[in-house]
Image 1 (tube, rainbow over the protein chains, first blue to last red):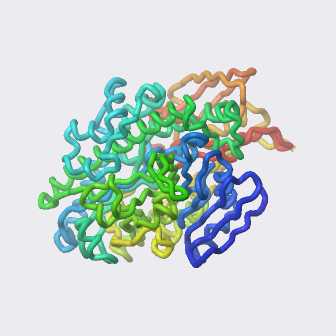
Image 2 (image 1 turned 45 degrees about the vertical axis):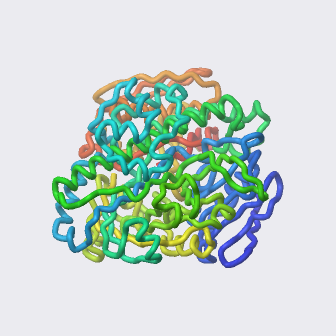
Image 3 (image 1 turned 180 degrees about the vertical axis):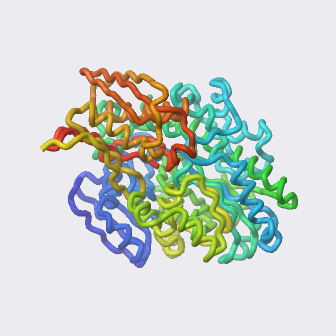
Length: 479
Length: 140
């Protein structure tokens, strides 16, 4: 579809793309006028939202969160739910980095208590966290061992001594996708991962030490175990090479499957299989296995972070606040027209944010709602939000995942210089950047992203999540 | 007028576009591989110390282009290899290639960023007045 897409303002923070052509449902975008102006500058984003709306079995709307920007197939920031009888499962709706996500941790110390050791901590983390292009983990898996990781996720990491019990409690699905099936993952995908477990990766993945600089809701912050000036850690990475290969493998077979099932797909990257087809189920099991790899990977890294802190700041007590993925497809119960239905909710660069009272949340968060982790850039704030009851109706309990890019990597590398960013952030904001690649740092420059403060303000105003705390970076370790 | 074989990177708001251009389809495949590798490292610094061979079978040549690029990502993850010399032969559904390069040395090769995967977005393999173009968006 290349025709122009009309954007209709519903209220200050809600916009729709009316249904037309092959769209089965309308599109819906959340964001302030400023955000929507930014988003709609790229007509491809509206086209991608509309393309998703043509897929069989889609429910209510094809959604875009305020950090939406052009992806491939789905927009980044896209959310779409499908019913299991006629609906599809889409590789592009999950993304190539299956279960890319963020873990938020606290250390039980205040800025004052870590300030004088911060350089030492930064250096130690840079040394122990394998990051950057071609980095290898300390764990060398055999083909048999990787099958165990694929089926057990973070539980495997716990068995190997990289976790404490409370870590798993605060990971989505307690760190293990039970429907994972290692036999649905290709040998090629497994081989690509043998040396990669426990690595951060490159691109926009990072490890950050932050300070809580603003509390929006005292009670919710208390439930998260945080108050002003507390030190936090955020870890952003995904399923590494295995997830990328799983996505590549299944994307290759999907156009043929779509054709066989007479699914009309607007672009190849949206190629999908019916949920109840053999191929759809194989992808579901393989995607869940890749999710286990992502959760195991983050857990191994948390083990290494703990080790680093015990060496340079033994008084730190590194505890998990929560871990949530933002490239996923999850089977969840949602209300559709007053009826409870089981749906396959795709979130591509969007975060699940269950509201208060959701039964599957850990007890500690059941009253306030799920912690939702929004990463900023190396020079801007990150946020912890919480889910709202309205978000279940408004966005299948989903919200944004970050700031969202506004500038291409090519442009950013031309405009910014890695060494300059590192120097400026140190001098102006006292932020320590430990990066393995200066061109990579330039492509991730804070100026290449939208305003995260405006993005999170928008999701709150739209009612799809509430801000709990804001945290500013002190140290960023990048690939 | 046909231009000499070369490669380009083109922008995408969140990912990266790579493009190979050449007088033949094979040359465009070779240049697309160089473009892919150039996102990851400074390819001028790679020495052709080791030779590897790739064989693929795929009827759809657009898909073959993605399979070819994915194979290079595979050799990187599994064998740490980076390449800057590619010789591609395509006959019908068969691709045979010889690649020359060496194991990654992050300092020597001035590492840039990692590529997660190829995508179908802006995938193009076509003959133009300038020659053959082989391109796609890669996920960073």
